[in-house]
Length: 241
Image (tube, rainbow, N blue to C red):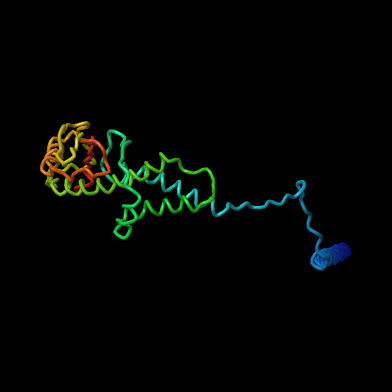
């Protein structure tokens, strides 16, 4: 009996001690959490990597931008022959006849769209401040290219109207043929020959026939000196789709 009472007393004491430890642990946790939430935030650390420099943006003057636009326009004219029209000029047109100034003044009201574009270029070049400008040769090349584009548009429209190839014969992939031709002063076409064949006989024959049917082409403009010009005419299958 005595031993049983002693064991029960020890169990009661151990249970009481365990409860006290649990309560004490909960109290300590509550104190720590209160300190963490109620304490003021610490100042954030700042990282420095040496001195700070300020940068001032530089803007270009309006005259410089205008000059740059004129030069870009000239470059666009120089590339337009190979991009807008399927023609390759074989020889440089160095000798281009000029129009008298009095004649230009008398026909200003009847200027074409091409001549108006050239007049705008001249005005931009004369209005800008003295800076590295276009040379006279560059200006002449730009004017020549603009005029040639107008002439190319006319002769290509005539050739393309005679270019016929059934869709059933047209290959699925893109092919290209280049034909050399000489255009005389009166528009007649001579010296026809292939510079590049497409590999499709029907396509090549249709391209050659279209030039022969379209001949004579538009006569050479008066501002082109010489009796003829040599060109390469590029025929691409995408034109027929």
